[in-house]
Length: 352
Image 1 (tube, rainbow, N blue to C red):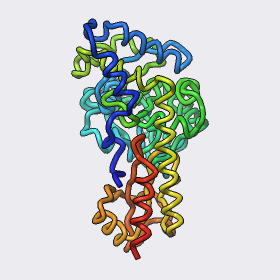
Image 2 (tube, rainbow, N blue to C red; image 1 turned 90 degrees about the vertical axis):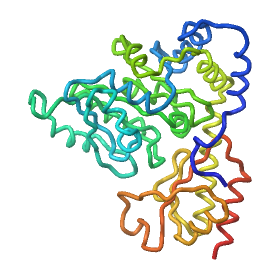
Image 3 (cartoon, helix red, strand yellow; image 1 turned 45 degrees about the vertical axis):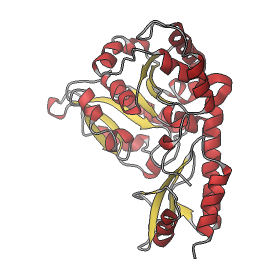
Image 4 (spheres, rainbow, N blue to C red; image 1 turned 180 degrees about the horizontal axis):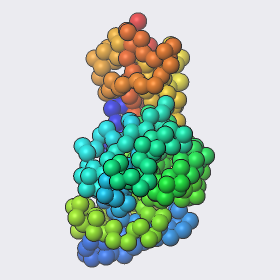
């Protein structure tokens, strides 16, 4: 009953197989190998255009370095107040951007909208040196609340960013989970909706250590290799990151693993609701946030369930946790089984 995080899962079989397959022999270092070139071309195919791809080790590096590429003196980076870059990255975006300021934008369900962004940006008028400069906008897809921006919502946010001549960044740590939920193409969810640069996450969806910064604006990508090197994320044995992506994309494994994780999350949510519980937000990817009685939470932990207490924000009073309740986070992965779900729901049903 391990629902602590998709980071707790191992690597998917297709990824492990590819790592083994590409392990023999010698290959040029630092991305000069043919496999890295081949995988980079695969990204071009997936996104239906030429893109610039740079492998990095972590999502934090991908986000921070991507934002650094668009940094400005006194730069302001707009993001949701609960976003990973704002809450969970130890000020790395500020560090990598040489002091960029993260400006929180509020909004329900883990998302902000165009009007909220306009209001937040209004505190940074162009040409007023005392306030700094609008530098970029960042959204998470899927969000930290397990919800997903629609294509229309992304495009509306891009319109606001474009009105101030700044780029739109997408933190895609759970990119594929959102993609299968929307049922659209990678191109539709990114550059066709106005995204300029993407942190393409694969580690949470079955890779061992494979993240990438993907630029749709090729001009902005020029010189990014120096940001990556200075940040300590140039792999000497790049072929082993490329190997993971090779297995990840093989026979649509990446879509299958994400679809499975999403399905397990939905099954859990349905079972919890049937047992009288509810979820804080709609379940749109592989995360869910049930609201349980505190005694249920404590007894489930005692039975071995790996779940976390989680802050529930922006919920209507009649839906928010009551004094005897708690919101918890549960995350499914490619490794979550139907038996895992059944075991949790069985344990829940045994609690009076």
